[in-house]
Length: 95
Length: 495
Image (cartoon, rainbow over all chains, first blue to last red; front, side):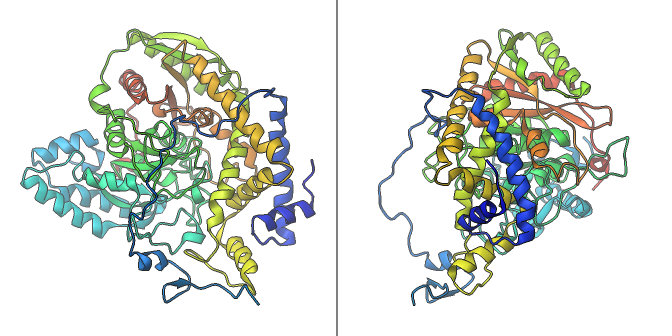
């Protein structure tokens, strides 16, 4: 596994982070080193081992699917970089 | 009765408030003054002195009416990862630099309901990602301790909860909240010579804590001693319908239960924790801790946690994977920074490029890679399987012992700037704390000794899930036997 410039660029794009050529030169070797270091996990035999996703092993509780707050539109948009009449404003996405 | 109120423990302060030896306003004002004097430590991102003094006046009114709550008027620092209503909450990031939560986190609400008073939002590594509090957008935090060998060097307080740890160690706050994903409370407690507790995963609600890696994140506590940490944890714990991973478990009265003799308690010493290159001071204090627990009546048993060496690389797949998913929400649309681009995709990319620091970007990219098509099973699923094996190691070990004793960290505090060019070296600083995190177990660090540089070293106690009582009992007995009383010079400056 090698993390070349094209791979760094691709990962950054998937993560929606703009990277410059300088950034690619900076992160590339670090990502390469970290991924090479985690390769040691390949030594561990995990045949038949169930992945552990919920460590507390307490079943997640469900709640009724009902509105339990409401009338907090102003709270919700309060921190928006741009909001108009209760809506979040973004650039035009449909031509 | 000492005249310096910033040197009291919580238990002592509550007793004095009850006897009206000083007022809540006096207690809080002294701590606020100390916070202002020690601004060069950069322990706080936002100070809330005015609200704190106003709350103290209310506490005095309550005390006068005989309506004192369990932690009335205790000045604390709140890690700036807990959302606090109408008080800026940054997570140490530029991207949340102007974020003012319209709601209060469950843990901070519970602490307020118990009477504690927050004097400010404590600095931290950006999004709690780091082990030295040097990744904060708001600058590094300085440890109040200095090395005797290099007294001019500023040291890190550890991380990610570095501001909280520095504030408690310096006597600015009587206790503080932290969070602990892979060691972010226990390791800074060790570096700063104080007590740091990470409870069982699910003990505290995560609601309103800015998410980093949700399957690992837990609220944590810093305090000056074990009893104070038990008082704080009790106030913070409990089931919350707003967090489905918080457990419907009864919360014991931790502080009332901790003074208990250790006869019959089996203390496990994991042989795999004796890692290469570990400083002799740490080996010595670990052995001393075991022998003190033995003197206190415990039985010492050697145990094996065979997958220990895989814990840190496992963590550095799982935590970044969860972070890459959790941090997808920072898109410049609903809150936080926005950097306008020519279209929405470019707005996302520019916002995140400018809003996140290098360590956060590194982890998001690692996580994104590990979750991407073609690599998911090789990295992420593999890591989840090894996580199971690590958890199983503890289950097996706890058949032979009741608590586990280990060093908290493989070093004492290092200088600001050291280790920062080598992410892997920094990651290995959590080698003794990450395994318990992956297994969801409670763990706590207590200060044990000073090393050859005059810097504190901590010992960690790990217990079974939900057995914080067993953990606190062992920690309390060890604390009594160790009798660690050293304080950094800065804590002795009278406020």
